[in-house]
Length: 107
Length: 126
Image (cartoon, rainbow over the protein chains, first blue to last red):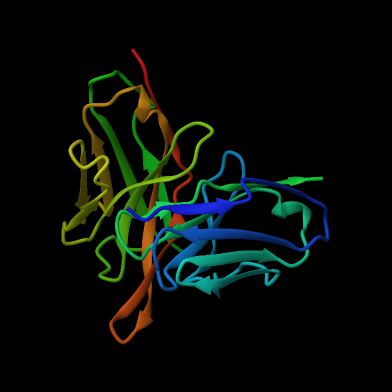
């Protein structure tokens, strides 16, 4: 199985901050990397697919980059509704695997 | 717009069978473009992919669960289902169904889960 490691596991930030979350794969996954946002009690929501493509309806302050083994999710200017958990997921091979998550909290 | 809705018992006894159904509305499970997947999330923990099915019935399971999992599709009812047997307390989780969509060209596709159900909580307890 491909292991996905996110850092940090938790992060405190303020509204308006620029935030970056990283995700590392245990082997090269090309650009087969997706990012999801999950709020408490809700299902995950797709933000970014294929490493850098913005899902329809997702604000442009979210962006993704990377290929191979190292990826980043950047939120350019945090909004109050962005405080949530974020997960990366590889779809290069099955079983699909997720990172352990990054919890973004209000400072 | 496609919507997914999970249904099934919220309480299952240890050693018995967990059975869930995902009803697809606003689209067809028979569309050849998509796979239909199950994912779960134990309380306070991360996400685990269980497996997916194609409308033809072809399946792909997580090896960690493969001996206990069956995913099936009913195109006439526009739904797909999950069975997990036998269950233990470790199978207590929120179970989500999701659509796996492709994007790409030239025979290379990227896959992502773009539509999710709201999730259903299953507790395994006697």
